[in-house]
Image 1 (cartoon, rainbow, N blue to C red):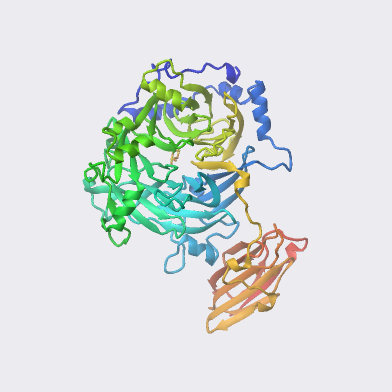
Image 2: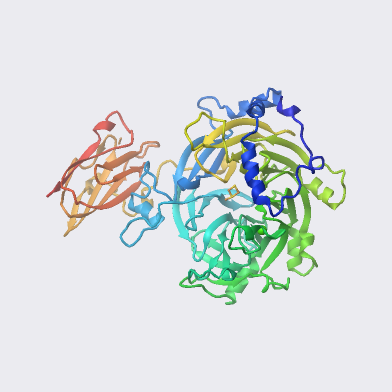
Length: 640
Ligand code: CUK
Ligand code: CUA
Ligand code: CA
């Protein structure tokens, strides 16, 4: 059966199947996952090979000719590999990975002193953490579109935020958030809420998902557990302030005027036990009034927690009842919502229901009205709450008024029209807000469309991160890849273009036009204070037991043919690659010393080690650079 001929259940028609998932939902979720294993694969296969003309157009778009470049960049979170992945779209080809939180053996991330300093080390110089769980990645804005300066990514396990410089595609700073566990949602502001001149990102907001005793004493008294919402300075990467809240923070969104940030909350119950988190029929989307919070910090209306010096303002419900002074606003949402996304017209935040089959539309102007005392009931800011399907999680936009929401349990993406949904909610039951549905394979989490959360949303391509791939790829043992599906959304109907296996588990991503970035392929020597700028500066420089080895690389040779050390020397080896042609990188490995790293054109990197093993060690170039690459080496002699 062709995809186009598949029955497209409208929300209205299918209410029987899509009844509200209530407190017993857990069972429902599990059953949903198990049930989809039984899904006939023939349906999946026919959807993928849709013979409709539209299908062929879509399929062609993802199959670039050899040598043809993609037209979009995609920045993907790397999940447990703790890196950021860079894809080209529409092909979906993975082009590179940018290591952040976790060591990377290709480039020597976690091996070189420079990367170790960024990653954070203990007093003995060893890495503080070697695991991470990245979920969300977002980039810096100017005038409502990406400006190509930075991207940020979170590590949920150790509550760290990493910044990626988008000129060199490298991580340059990592900050650990104080007093936060389970740092999840992340989103940069899109401009300053007060200063007219600042029309670009200066803050990054970070939501703390897990509640803990503050300070974390190990108390079992769950009534004292709290979460924090954190603001990090986009430039210095220092933590500016935090907000103490009721409930938890899940995902994060920001408004185009810079005035509002919000998090969806699935645990307003503040349950410390699993079942408790699902007991309430409604949760919230929690709004932060950025200008007011910063005024409160300036006025000294804060406390600090434990040894952290970060100002913490009070955003709890009890302290924010008066709209005219409130720092926060808790907008009621159906049970355990997941995901909050800002529409590209700047008007709405959309929360997906997760345990409720609904999408909720919150009008930002009304939230601002409430803060000014002009809207009596905050709930009136909810302008639509419409049925979408089972297990709605995340929403993307096409810039033509349509939203695309993943349905985890239904294994579908539903395309719906936001203004029609608002009309339907107002009482016009003839308003058909569901435009299209497409089966995805299987259980989608995040999705994102090209330029989706920018003012330049262009509605061309949609990527869907399917959490289960099941039968879509050659079997490779028990651990399946995830399935990143590429969908053409340029027409009325969505068309599946391609499946791509991805290593678990990328969660979130952004897709934007390639001309928004101008990556540099050769470093500037001055980026590195330790640079060895001339081969003549090479040599072994001794100061007692402390030894510095300086060398340079120029294909196909290192500047030193050999260098001598004494057993027990504390060595720092500095290598500058003086080749300045794009794509001419060298590697540097020291056998038995656990050293290997790459130096890109005009890059400098250093490693420190104790020369504790006497002998001859051939330090060789590990990165293919020249016809004489295999010969490219230097001899490290450690005298007993
Ligand atoms: S969460 Cu992963 S599927 Cu961390 Cu963005 Cu929704
Ligand atoms: Cu230098 Cu291979
Ligand atoms: Ca709940």
